[in-house]
View 1 (cartoon, helix red, strand yellow):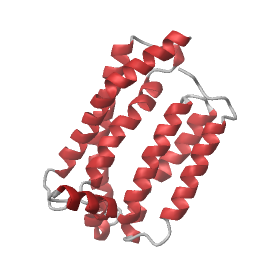
View 2 (view 1 turned 180 degrees about the horizontal axis):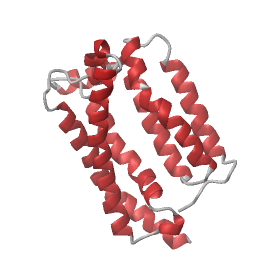
View 3 (view 1 turned 120 degrees about the horizontal axis):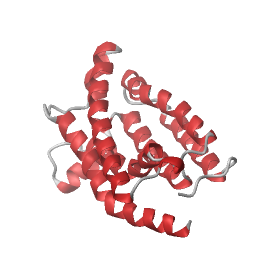
View 4 (view 1 turned 45 degrees about the vertical axis):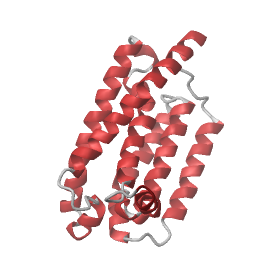
Length: 206
């Protein structure tokens, strides 16, 4: 695993890109109160990322993948996930029944965050077999996806019930939370063989 240098230009680029994206997405969000709720996790995640970068726990590739996921979230939060123009365009082009941008982002979370969670769970001094690392990482993705859906619901009803509907974006689907968590898990499973190959290549170069 190639850990970043202390003054990694990749880390600087990632934080700068996210900061610019956040500033743009903060301009006149479609539902301001729902936008604030969407960024409760962001307010927690950014300081955590700063800490992880300072401790050199994540590789540069993980930082890039986390940033890509963050940009997808910024776009969804600006419009709310159920009202993104991209989601509506895909709905109309594919003749779907709803705006599926939320599903896309949950699926992308599994694809993009599998490696970061593996690096967090198995740092250099606690490595295990490749298969075990990745299997546990997929389970972590699924567990966090389920936990996030519960926290999302609790946040909506406790912090700002009036903005809860726009924040949750269920679009009338009673099984929305379960489907979102499933999408994240499927994304991680899809990324599994690619991550396995890249992990083996990284280990071979050491």
